[in-house]
Image (cartoon, rainbow, N blue to C red; front, side, top):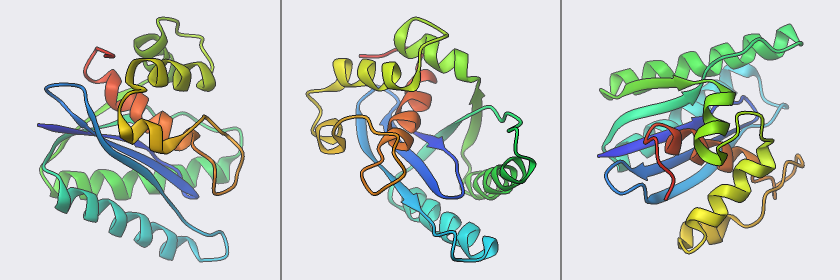
Length: 167
């Protein structure tokens, strides 16, 4: 009874596998692609990575943030294509898909719909900090480098939102 939380992005897609019965975060991470590669290759890499997760875990449902229109049309189009790849693969594996708005996610995790991403990560750390999976992620960082953890925390948050509980 696992839930897959996803934070889709062409450059760094965060993911988290959560036990739907206990709310325990089982595994999480991010898969990254390089802007030096063509978009088709990047989408293929994302699809391959998500397939590996779905082959390893029996996912009953996946959860993503609802799509929003970015100020930059190119970014919105890229995000739509990433989401399309993810939806297709998830459906091929028989997973249902849920979508939550950013304010719904923030409200579920922090109790406030206008919290910032760092507040969401702090709430997750407070509630799940004894979990070795969370300890391995480390502190929240939104800097675009290998230490960036915001995508992972966002994926955990969206997955936990579907449970309507934070332990």
